[in-house]
Image (tube, rainbow, N blue to C red; front, side):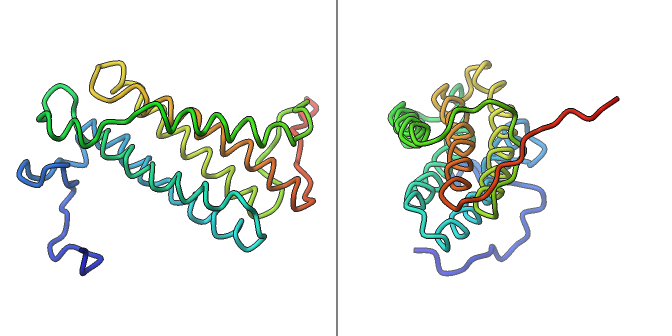
Amino acid sequence: MLRRAAARAPAAGALPREDPREGRASTGNPRAGPVLPADSLCPCRLASELSSDKGHAFVEQLHKVQCMLQDVGSNIATPLSSARQAHLKRTSFSEKPVLELEQWIDKYSEELPPLRAFILPSGGKSSAALHVSRAVCRRAERCVVPLVQAGEADPNVAKYLNRLSDYLFVLARYAAMKEGKEEKIYIKPEP
């Protein structure tokens, strides 16, 4: 049980590893890059709070996403090439969450009008927060792909982040529609 929210000593530019006996990893370590954007998906929490205020039924899904992002971070922080088998087992990431996201995407997409133009982040506070979350998720995905290509992170983590960004986009559109808010369309400026 956690009894305090902060460590007694400053992190000094270091992140904890999955196994505390391995010490701390420098935040300059290439593995820290993807962990930090995955961890920075806290806009999901803001989107969840704003969506809850509007009575959206997908709030529980966003809570589940936040829990999965903890697992994403654990997987990224555990090098597949050098971690002990017990750690690999504990931080493995299955395809099941990816498939669940795809089901959610399909469910909400069926209710949306067809996409005919590029949509700018808009559509009310819930929608805008979901668009911000999507942008942060894309950044995390771009950081994870090199680790997956190097065989150091589970490919399902990259797939999850990819599908999550699509889910957040669809959800942003859905929230705007349900709240009766207008989505702003990109209009190319005159030269």
